[in-house]
Length: 213
Image 1 (cartoon, rainbow, N blue to C red):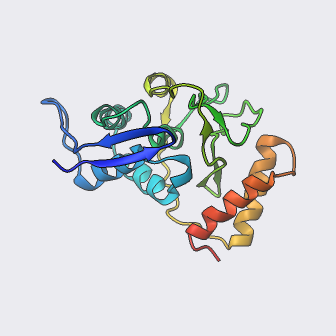
Image 2: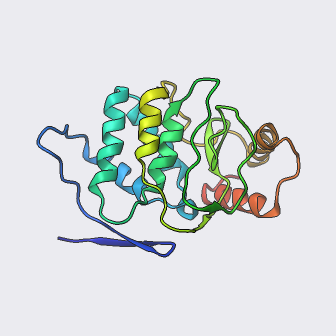
């Protein structure tokens, strides 16, 4: 059996083909492959297009089914408790009540400090700009093993509201206008117009990868 070995930080994850339990529903091969790729995603390999196209497909399912697919993807992969991209997908896939906050992801100390914001729109480490995501960090300083996904699954099972509005699959504005929108979203969360040089550089890098003019 062919195995693909992916090194993330100091961990090695072995990804094997999906095996379903007897009672599990068989989803499309394309969706399975997308979920597997999201499982393997790290902050520095962030792929917003993959996230939004997958999230849009998942909107055609019921909340229980979406959670089951994410859970099964997480459980079917070999390796330590990584699956970082699935944590990000959950934050995009579900809205939460106005008096709640998305849970912090315990993967270590993020390269960019999280905002001191209690808004339910605070999806750190991702930030939605014109409804299209960018990520504010390139990774974490690890201080032990990262958490598994259980806490987050229970949270969205209890409080999450499945988003029903499709995400745009590409940035529709110019690069300058999109970056201006980013600065406005940054201000809403961080209450300052000062953006660290490392964050500005990383956002620009992501726009380069999207070939945005």
